[in-house]
Length: 102
View 1 (cartoon, rainbow, N blue to C red):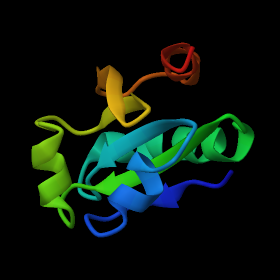
View 2: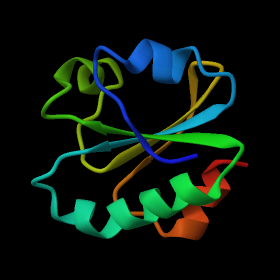
View 3: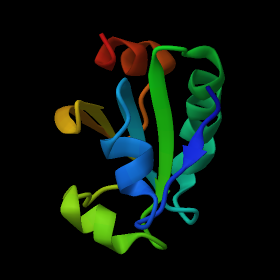
View 4: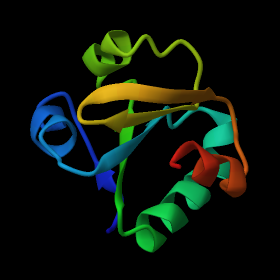
C-alpha cells in the first residue's frame, strides 16, 4: 500500500473505518526531523501489506493533532480497530517502527 495523506475530512474513512492496523505519522513540514523520518515512512508504506500507513500534517489538520494530543513532532501512533495501542515521539529508526507494529 502507498502512504495515504489524511485530513480532518478524510480521517474517519481512511483510518477509523479501515480494517487493518494503521500507522499514523503526525508531521509538520517545518520540522527538521521530518526530512529524516519522511523517507522511512514512505518506504514502510510501499513495503507493508498488512498495515495502512498514513501521514497527517498537523498545521493543516489541527483538529486531529488536538484529538490525539500531539505536542511534539514527529509523532507516530499505531491504531488497532480505531483505538490507539502504541505511540512514539521523535525520530525512530525503521526497526523500531517495525517493532511497534508487532
